[in-house]
Image 1 (cartoon, rainbow, N blue to C red):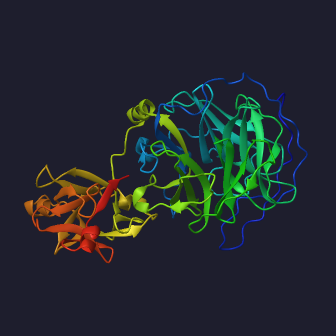
Image 2: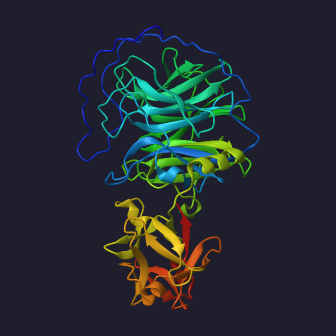
Image 3: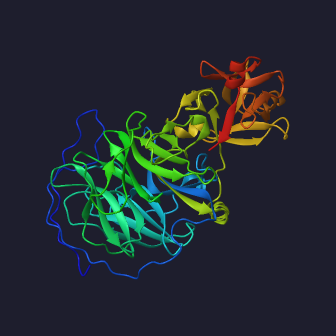
Length: 477
């Protein structure tokens, strides 16, 4: 690109109908397209698939129901199985845009042909859907520990957005394709593509996928058994298309739609442990940002089975994820650099959509997500009465601990007495319903365990299978 393109200021965009979810689209006509020159050295290397990959990294931004967690920087989490996630840097951002809207949504991580990473993201801070940017945010990174070369890359000069950018290596073109959502001349969202070698300048945009109806959030799995798969959002469901080539216009819808309420942001993830198994993640619309996951043993079949929520846990307040495989050395290096959280969350075994929290100082399990979200964050510290046990210190009320009183669990200020210390101390044991989970036996009432009853926590004797499930929790993040 030899100079800035002149784009007339965008006019006002109509908002969504009252009470509805905005469709993340503008309704403006398109300006004439001005080609952008592609320059830079061609990236060469072993490709994005590495035999040594043994773990995963996730990128996301954060929001919560009352927007207390709204943070539009790049957040990272890691996982060894692609299902249970550990947020890094205390769930704070590791990089934040310094140009454009000064915020990001929809981050995407790609390992380039030379083995380094590039991070792309929507140039949008918050939920002002009238904001129009022809640019996307871009960072380079050798290791996801440092982020360099921050810039914005212009994709078009049209009077429409550039949402949810993703990239892939097109071996036939020996260039990277960058796909994203934009509005076409018919007034509906399509998936566009530009080609680049350096993620600094790009070719003129082309329509990559337009089935004739509104589609956003394209996610590609390239070269799986000689077929390329594109998943996208259609009418609040996740749907797949496929093609034997990567040519624009070559993809045809084929899969069974999946959804859990209004679902968007599909992410395809290949299992590193089970041959042929793929996961499909989706994000429910709204600041709640609840993720759901499905599994298939054949991408070609296009059918998915919902995973039990016990099997996966998303990072706290995460929205619109990207997942990429990494090596075990990179996994260890990321944890060494950014650190793991100094707090935990506890998920209910038999109500895995619910987490332990305090509300009006009463301990209970409530559906994720909620605000104030720190109500569900706990520091599991050495037991106040016995350091071989555990006590639950509130993150947002650090002078208060979970203790039992008349067998009910509540959040009280530590008064320094031996009675309080004993009431607030528990023995962690193997989960009564699942030994891979955890249960907590009262220190001074050792025949009783923490359990929920009508969603409220208390200590009770446990004998039946239901009671064992009520008393079993996952300690995670």
